[in-house]
Length: 445
Image 1: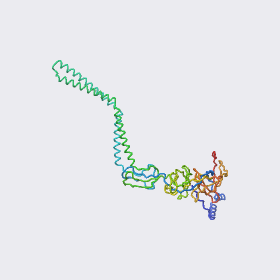
Image 2: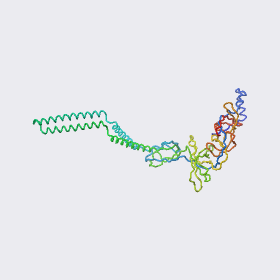
Image 3: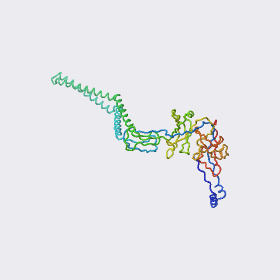
Image 4: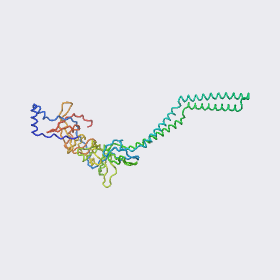
């Protein structure tokens, strides 16, 4: 939130011209009085200043680092055919950083998919069993073989009878008739077996073999698809491209770096804290972060870790503070490598005045808050109150949750504006008037 600059004081000449212009247009004294009336009261939300005991703070110098930093490499060897990113570009999770040529492996995939389709059709044929037409065909063959068998059996008996009664038949004729009957009997048995097989359907073992062939081919297809995915080099998280290691048309080997991506939607400020202050710091506590190159902003972060390995020469320990970044049209305002100052609670507890961070108005030479008196003057609707707001320059101290310590001309009896403070317009003289509806106090506070 920023304070708009106050309107400049008009000169007497300008005021005289205004009066003459209104008089020429036929405006009466009421119109003149209305033109000089102060701006209407601004509707705001207020909360009381809170007094609490907080640990005294100390400022440490730190450096802004990305929350994640990855140098993305190629998992395969090949020629880069697409490189759609440039240094400084924002990329989302899963975005393509580079594409490696995939001509040969795509042909292998098509062949494997065709073989998979063939294996699935063979399995479906077995699982569907014998078709009705095939059953009728097997039954017809068995009936035909039975008829042939019976005919040749009768013929053999006639030949043997003629051979016994006369010399019209020779022994060779009898043997030939017997052989034909035996052949017909075997053909009939074969037709019966074929009919039984058709009625029983495919063996479970053949279906299992076909299922195994399908599974094997599916694994082959998935393997090729996975390999093709590796030919598309992508970012695993949202961030910004900070380094380029290749270009379109260049050959890369497996493991070669392609681009470096830094996650900056959240950043970490790494500060080195003297060992005497480290016992007072623990993960989860709030910390105030200021960036000298961003003088009109202050940030509240959370200690994410206290590294238990210090520098034996300086006796300092790394403390990391996680801070949510602000993303503008030009990118993140906090960039990796920037200097930062972190205020951490490091000493004994002391009485302090706390206000919500939304009460801070930044953008001027010093942070300030808009304060109003607790009582105010009663309004006309719904218990609404009105009062004058005064701008109070403050110095910032340690943070506690969503609140921050302020040092300035404030007391526990004051209210501070937390919503609508960006709409307060200071008049040419005096203090601006604001209006608010008092909130019922919470239980226990």
